[in-house]
Amino acid sequence: SCQDKIDIASLDSKEQETLQKLLYQVEKSPEANTATLIEAWRDTPYFAALGKLAGWAHEEPEDELIKKFTDIILFLQKQNLENKIHQY
Image 1 (cartoon, rainbow, N blue to C red):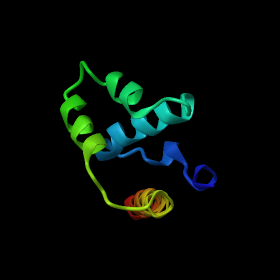
Image 2 (spheres, one colour):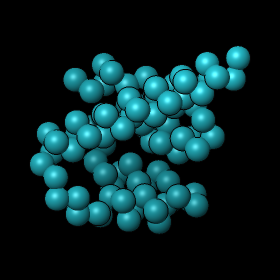
Image 3 (cartoon, helix red, strand yellow):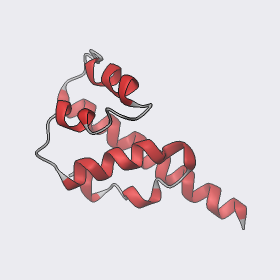
């Protein structure tokens, strides 16, 4: 499963803070639906953007969407690791 590959803690750059929080939210409440997840962000500056993303008609089959999402997260994890290596 994609959960086995994703290390949420490694998404620790400032630019990935919202993504990290959203992934922790899903991990904590995997049964939550989209509306419930977005509602938790109502009083934040990200609420409108998350609502737009949730309503986006991506036209992808679910299994392909999961694969692409996982690939993006894995890319970000690798990029963060490379950035940390280059800092030393």
